[in-house]
Amino acid sequence: MTLGLTGRDAGRLAAVAAQSGEAGAAVVQGVFDVRDRHALTGFLGAFDADHPVDLLVANAGVLEGRQADGTSEDGETARRVVEINLLGAIDTVHAVLPGMTGRASGHIVLVSSLAGLSPVADAPAYSASKAGLLGYGRALRTALAPSGVRVSVVCPGYVASAMTDSHIGKQPGKIGAPAAARLIAEGVARNRAVIGFPRVLFRLAMITPFVPEAINRAATRDLRFHVARK
Ligand SMILES: NC(=O)c1ccc[n+]([C@@H]2O[C@H](COP(=O)([O-])OP(=O)(O)OC[C@H]3O[C@@H](n4cnc5c(N)ncnc54)[C@H](OP(=O)(O)O)[C@@H]3O)[C@@H](O)[C@H]2O)c1
Image (cartoon, rainbow, N blue to C red; front, side):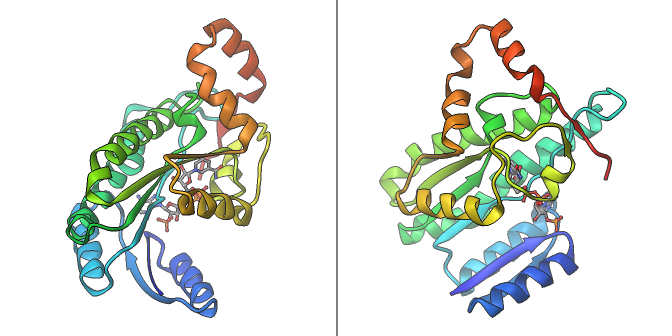
């Protein structure tokens, strides 16, 4: 199996590539920012030509939001979040989609969030980017169904990572990355449209749009958070 791994930080990428190599994967690394469409398209296009992609995971994302002093994200930050989390993922899909549709096979996995189902007051742009990605993925799944290309959207709750380290607040139902990876792999194998976890929080997030605003606010008061400066 050949794994294409991408990110901005060459050192972190090399460490993950080494671990993947030890587990038996051949790895091709691409160091670029997903906002750099030229680099993204060049890398993924060349990778797909050499190793026809059967599973694409658009995972790159950043969390920004309310600061420790109570100030909200500024306009520049909000734009950057949407550019990375939503437009970066859409560009990632389009870099590989012609190959997949040409072969009439492949699975696209978009990593959204429970915040895409139930927006969080302390991270408005993050919530918008993840809601956008969820809508995009669900629409794309239906659009691509006749072509043989599958699409799933992942909506995780809290998963231990550098991102949750920067989320200063309660994190109910937090799980480790290996457990999250297993749930995602299971959902992908079953070709689920939306892979949400943990189950209880996923179900609560699904009914949020039907809950009166005052009740929703009261229920989430304890979950307010701020994002630590990097
Ligand atoms: N952890 C959670 O609780 C949680 C919950 C719901 C959804 N998610 C989603 O899961 C995904 C992974 O998050 P994580 O928790 O693993 O966070 P993380 O530890 O901060 O990892 C984020 C990943 O995205 C990459 N990335 C960020 N900005 C990028 C950019 N501009 N260009 C290219 N790559 C970029 C990072 O690589 P480099 O830094 O090397 O670029 C890193 O691999 C994100 O989409 C996140 O929104 C996480």
